[in-house]
Image 1 (spheres, rainbow, N blue to C red):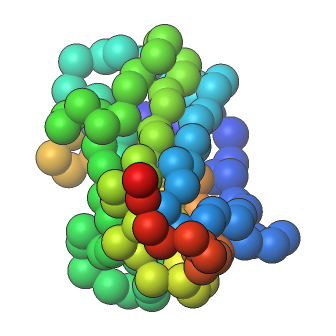
Image 2: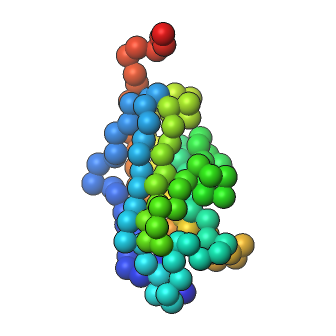
Image 3: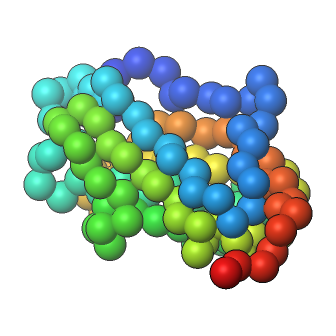
Length: 127
């Protein structure tokens, strides 16, 4: 089994995120070549942000559908919001991110892979 179609790579320029803001990452039209879907029992979607591609998991942030922090919105789509409480802890800089779909303990597929630039926020005080 594999994800139908190529891995989506996002290297043309880093996605920008202001530290402390919500990052709404989502994907649709996820298809597998054997007919399984994101709603098949045991599927887990995970998004990881790391300083270096070689850093150990969980990197600087990691969310997943098993923990309820990523929502499978349909058989072919998911929503992975990285909340302000998480992004405010990430220092400004360039990071790597990916989303992986775990089909089982021994079967995983990278769905997205790219760069994320976390920009410094100016106002750090909350009312």
